Length: 64
Image 1 (cartoon, rainbow, N blue to C red):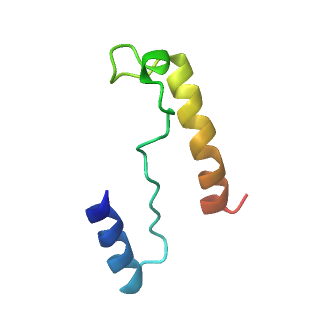
Image 2 (tube, rainbow, N blue to C red):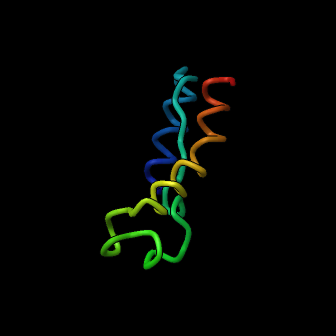
Image 3 (cartoon, helix red, strand yellow):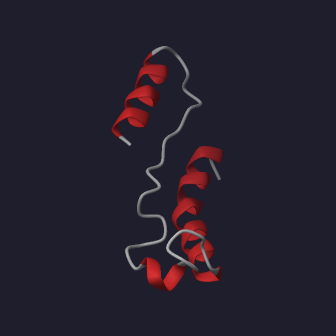
Protein backbone atom coordinates (compact mmCIF):
# COMPACT_ATOMS: atom_id res chain seq x y z
CA UNK A 1 0.00 0.00 0.00
CA UNK A 2 2.85 2.39 0.73
CA UNK A 3 4.10 2.11 -2.84
CA UNK A 4 0.64 2.67 -4.33
CA UNK A 5 0.10 5.76 -2.18
CA UNK A 6 3.52 7.13 -3.18
CA UNK A 7 2.76 6.63 -6.89
CA UNK A 8 -0.60 8.37 -6.55
CA UNK A 9 1.00 11.30 -4.70
CA UNK A 10 3.73 11.60 -7.32
CA UNK A 11 1.20 11.63 -10.15
CA UNK A 12 -0.90 14.23 -8.36
CA UNK A 13 2.14 16.47 -8.00
CA UNK A 14 2.74 16.03 -11.73
CA UNK A 15 -0.71 17.46 -12.41
CA UNK A 16 -3.09 14.51 -12.41
CA UNK A 17 -5.75 15.87 -10.07
CA UNK A 18 -8.34 13.29 -11.15
CA UNK A 19 -6.49 10.41 -9.52
CA UNK A 20 -7.83 9.05 -6.23
CA UNK A 21 -6.61 6.45 -3.75
CA UNK A 22 -8.63 4.38 -1.29
CA UNK A 23 -6.88 1.84 0.92
CA UNK A 24 -8.88 -1.33 0.44
CA UNK A 25 -7.34 -3.24 3.32
CA UNK A 26 -10.31 -2.84 5.61
CA UNK A 27 -13.24 -2.49 3.20
CA UNK A 28 -14.97 -5.56 4.60
CA UNK A 29 -14.00 -5.06 8.22
CA UNK A 30 -11.80 -7.35 10.25
CA UNK A 31 -14.05 -10.39 10.60
CA UNK A 32 -13.35 -12.08 7.27
CA UNK A 33 -15.05 -15.29 8.40
CA UNK A 34 -18.39 -13.48 8.39
CA UNK A 35 -18.09 -11.67 5.09
CA UNK A 36 -16.17 -14.06 2.84
CA UNK A 37 -16.74 -17.55 1.52
CA UNK A 38 -13.20 -18.80 2.05
CA UNK A 39 -11.26 -15.82 3.35
CA UNK A 40 -11.02 -14.29 -0.13
CA UNK A 41 -14.31 -14.15 -2.00
CA UNK A 42 -16.96 -11.79 -0.57
CA UNK A 43 -20.41 -13.00 0.38
CA UNK A 44 -23.46 -10.74 0.15
CA UNK A 45 -22.44 -9.25 3.50
CA UNK A 46 -18.92 -8.64 2.20
CA UNK A 47 -20.18 -6.88 -0.90
CA UNK A 48 -22.53 -4.78 1.23
CA UNK A 49 -19.64 -3.69 3.44
CA UNK A 50 -17.53 -2.83 0.39
CA UNK A 51 -20.38 -0.75 -1.04
CA UNK A 52 -20.91 0.99 2.29
CA UNK A 53 -17.20 1.82 2.55
CA UNK A 54 -16.90 3.10 -1.03
CA UNK A 55 -20.13 5.10 -1.25
CA UNK A 56 -18.81 8.18 0.61
CA UNK A 57 -15.62 8.14 -1.45
CA UNK A 58 -17.54 7.87 -4.73
CA UNK A 59 -19.88 10.68 -3.67
CA UNK A 60 -16.86 12.88 -3.01
CA UNK A 61 -15.19 11.94 -6.30
CA UNK A 62 -18.37 12.47 -8.29
CA UNK A 63 -19.23 15.56 -6.22
CA UNK A 64 -22.73 14.28 -5.37
